[in-house]
Image (cartoon, rainbow, N blue to C red):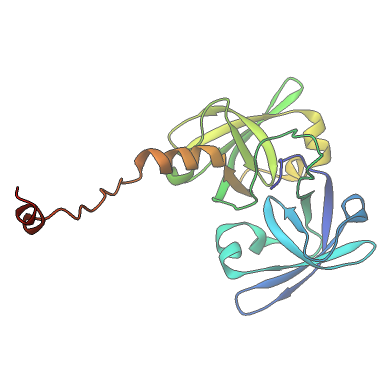
Length: 214
């Protein structure tokens, strides 16, 4: 589990491409102090497993399913990525519950200055937008942000200068593709509310009733 509070911006050092998968080699500094092989690291919001670790980089496998649902397929050597380690049990919960399981991607439709903040409008599929609510939480490239507005085809967030300075969001432009993860609580609530209840099967038959005098 993650919180959507980016710890560091890393750089893609290399990409080894398979038939439908890739292996990423990513440089980092701060997060590697206590990372071990097998640990989870969110890369642009996608939960990946560290398969090797050294003093200044780690590698991670990316399977076809992940490539098809995220923007990781567009990474190149030199690309910057948001990094966050899995949340420690004694850590502060600064963002919201983030699983690192991307729901899909969105496209930055508009960027505009709003005094000390910057507003981003992002278009997304209706299957993603139905879980996004005004003043609710959404994860964009692994960043926990608050939704300021929702329409039928897009939603908006307002980003403070600090977030822009410590993430890759400030590098994005109109047309950029971003990873999106909905608030997981909303998805579970929907599942519970609309799940079909199975009626318990009864063992009482006509024969059973006749046998006992009914």
